[in-house]
Image (cartoon, rainbow, N blue to C red):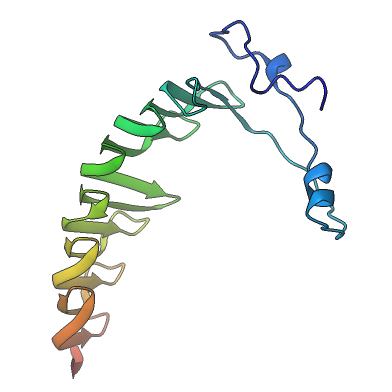
Length: 196
């Protein structure tokens, strides 16, 4: 660890340079914590980042992560350790898969997020889901929709089959099911009503 460049002043580079990567063995920390379990495996480095820390060691300024291909993976801005402003995340092909805004370090306003083939979109307020949200299947049809308040389901929610028909619907009050919940088969015929 005597040649460790971390925490030292270096000349700023504005391009990716693989010589800046520095391997840190996990073995030393495992010994300190008396972890004697043999660990087998390896790390696969598929991305790299271009980032800045301020004098307090907190992220500051524009941060960018890249795929091994050189395509951008994620870009966002930090202000004294706190994410601030627009954040975008991309697939390796350049498609935007996540987009939203941070205000004082919290998600705020409209966001959409895609995880694999599934997508969700709606608003955040003070870092919590707030307002109407939609969730989608991989085929692009809505899987569920409903309102959130302070991060909890609140109001009518509708769940759908992947063919677009209603699977079930009912109301929530601050995250708890309330009243009559109706369930339907894949053809839209009523199956049951459960009262909460």
